[in-house]
Amino acid sequence: MADPQSVLGLSRPDWAGEDVAMLYDMASRFLTEEIAPHYEAFEKAEIFDRASWEKAGAAGLLCASMPEDHGGAGGTYAHESAIIEAISHVGVDGFGIALHNAIVAPYILHYGSEEQKQRWLPKLASGELIGAIAMTEPGAGSDLQGVKTRAEKDGNHYRLNGSKTFITNGQLANLVIVVAKTDPSQGAKGTSLIVVETDEAEGFERGRNLDKIGLKSNDTSELFFNDVRVPTANLLGHEEGQGFVQLMQQLPQERLLIGAQAIAMIERALAVTIDYVKERKAFGQKVIDFQNTQFKLAELKTEATVGRVFYNDCVARHLAGNLDTATASMVKYWLTDLQCKVVDECLQLHGGYGYMNEYPIARMYRDARVQRIYGGTNEIMKLVIARTL
Image 1: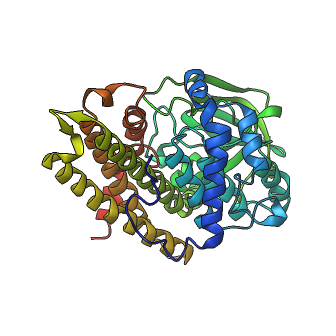
Image 2 (image 1 turned 180 degrees about the vertical axis):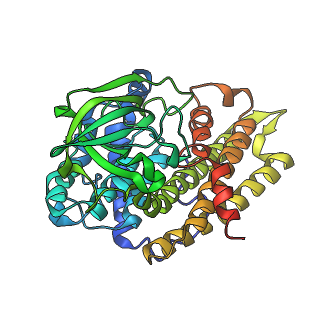
């Protein structure tokens, strides 16, 4: 297959230095050799095995941006981007380590006490703990202020009651950051983040592994909290009521991460499609020789190049500490819309074979669609951007 990383012919951005490039190469080799041969089985089982997480931890692919003294590799978001892009370029998009690495672990790093960091981050880095964040509820999706899950103080514990849905890594996770109301009368200001270690939690239940259109191998679950007693020491932050602010501070990286997944799949879709049209013949000539094919791929490559340059610029801003919420919303919404468009057009160029599951483009078509929904729907992204007008 054409190399997805070089299909656009762009030079490496300044933030992707030699160490980032080496990590990308190492991650690509690991995923190709250790994950890809088993990926079809994970898709059919609709879940990964824990052994794959532990292998990823041993290979240094978990918590790459966490400090070395907390079990990580001491990198930055640039290193996480390399891993995320390798996952999509290899085509094992259901491996849920991006959320674990670049969403769950940073909450503990930025808001956890030193004791919490020492307790949880090394185990997240090894794969002993698998992370999830429980935001969405049956009645509260993108509207985080509508969360109903309640955490009531009971001595030196909280009693946690409520339900969550659409939780990525929900079947495997044994460390879950729960968004809960510690003071419902305060609205958003009464929201807190509480870490639940599920292996020891009475009253914690996992619902079904949800039957999704795509990303089948990525377990996505309902979670139930029925009078779960959680030590007050598991609160993230120095005091209650900081949860909404903490969520807002971390959402730009989450949305940038979704942009990484989008641009990487766009590049892979183009790579597999270019290979296909160069080999496939119709009406006595290769499909690439038709002017329509050339024009369509020229359009898609141009749009993909614009998307990659925009993503690279957003990463540079993020590493400099000045990626604002509106721009992060732009990269999330625009790249995921583009992702769905490019994958759809690439499927069309495959003709009937594009609709066959044995061709990678078919899986990409299914897997891409959710990108416009999670992390805040693209409609919410536009509202965020509109507030800056």
